[in-house]
Length: 457
Image (cartoon, rainbow, N blue to C red):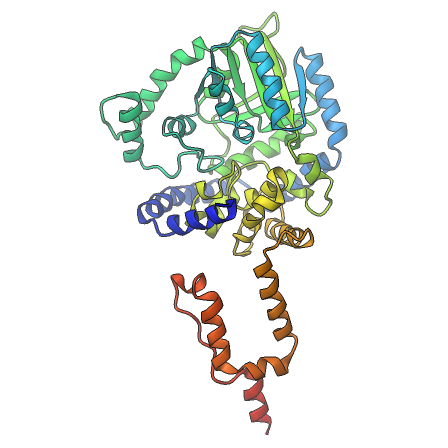
């Protein structure tokens, strides 16, 4: 089964899964209320969005300059930089560190770049215990699943689902009390921080002028992952760059209000290398893996490179009617929703993932909520055009559009077909798809053109 066929099959199932829809509706309703409250913090949020869009665009347009500035400052602080062209190279370099440190266990904070390169699977295949410490990530890891959402990985699970997962995999007494479930995870994870030789994190922002990695979180697990183990590896996409520390004053609140409705998240850290002699805690060694993995290909396209401005807040997912109906796992990619549909064909191949850009209503809700004003719905159209220009189109689609074009450009052909033939064509070609869950439309006995002619007579 092709990736596109699998997508259609899963989407068809999930869209009519009532318990799933109820869970998502419940969790989304809490998000909407929180975000609306969070937005009230701004005197002029549109100005903040415009400024953030400008700063990120400048950073992306001058990425070569800022990456070198970041590297220079990070090395000056005692850190080590690894440049990775793709996931294979990133995994090879990470494995060298893991082997060198005689690693038996790794603790990880929430990071989508490690999902992108499939780091967990790689390390576990090598016999390394790899533990997610973000509560949502820990839950889906126990369940053997992938994150459902780029901000809230376990959004699709109710507290009853989580209670069953804990009972089955952790062999704890059944409880569906959220506080008790959190405490169970906390107790089990505490020892993991102390045992792990390596802590792995992502990075919300790369800060060029200080050579820092900015991490924002709500649980404190990222701080423990990056301070308790003697070695810290941060894996960050090269597009996460901002020019200066001052920019975080704008981006951290925008990220939190768009993602969770908070004025600012509970924990915000800037890591600029390993522990210094006069510092009480921190790693002895710190590495940052700067991941390309298709990003420079997107950067080379002036019409689409604004997609690299994304700060991974998840707002577009929460606004998207398609995402809310088919769910995050249906996309079968680390980055789901509108932003995932835009960037995945460039990161993982247009031929295999072009269908994601067609899985959109083009309503523009994603563009309206994006805190850095990415023109998402138009980027989806550009992806569709690229797939056509590259001739990555099914033969049946080509024939259908050629016939449609021929008919639409000829009034005599349209009138010649008549209502009976038009209805027959609709039922022949579209009933299996459009008519599966809907009543098929019926063409009127006379077209507007025919009625207009009769009126003029």
